[in-house]
Image (cartoon, rainbow, N blue to C red):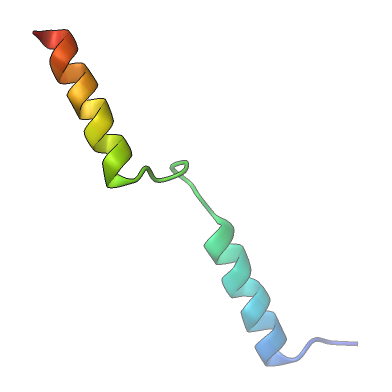
Length: 43
């Protein structure tokens, strides 16, 4: 049997949310830590 429109849309939204084409996005804290590490290394 075919799926209802709302079911199809929900599944499509779930697939769309799961995508991470550029990898996991880092938090600002993680980015700040990395920036601090590279700054210290360059001195």
